[in-house]
Image (cartoon, rainbow, N blue to C red; front, side, top):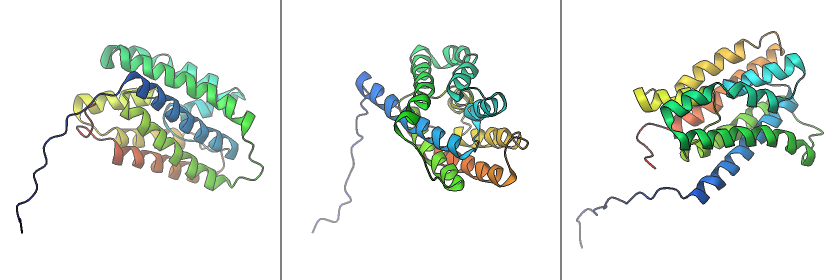
Length: 208
């Protein structure tokens, strides 16, 4: 009987093809935008740039998609300077698709009975998975995501921890927009979203 411990040769890392990147961006943005629709239906909030867009849409009765797209515009400069053209282009496409899909989902899906607390928690869970798909393919949804990813790559600060702190502040700023129970659910949802990111997106874990 051979008691020698098996040796594992290093596996060559194969970069994603442009087709894989395109499909990942499509899948990730579909998931994030569907989570956004659930939160919007429940009257809930989330953090990051999406949370700011929610605040604008609730206060001005404007479209979330348009607000989300406009808020992200200033952050592309940082993305271009620090993350490069490829990341910036992918992020621009991802932001545009989320803005578009938040308009399209309601044309095909209607929630007649949706528990607001369930929608808030499950919506953030779906969004968290969508973020991981985008991050894995070197894309983001702009705003705080760009800042968090840059700080993680530059200084090793975990993206999830930074976003959790920012998101909590954004949700707390919404105290006068939603009820206290809905605010509590929104905070729990933001924590869930960022725990998913913190557990699954760490420096050095993925190199391609």
